Length: 66
Image (cartoon, rainbow, N blue to C red; front, side):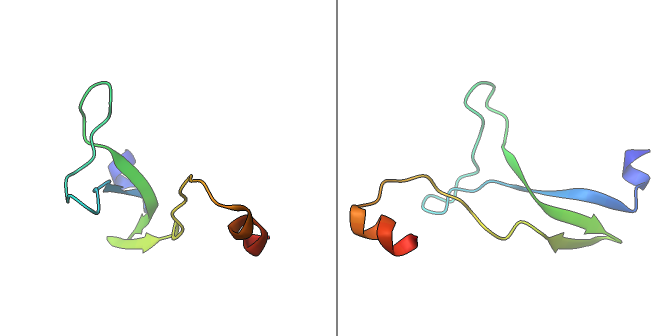
């Protein structure tokens, strides 16, 4: 059974950092969870440490990142 697996995926609820509200999906209103790592022997091991954002940047910012 899946619950008996030694290593399982670890998910966390997605929370809006400015409002503190739990994010829900657009279509059915269910709470959104995000894969953060694995569970091993009841311990959470975070493997996804980076958080990516899409945004605009000026020409100077783009050159500095390269």
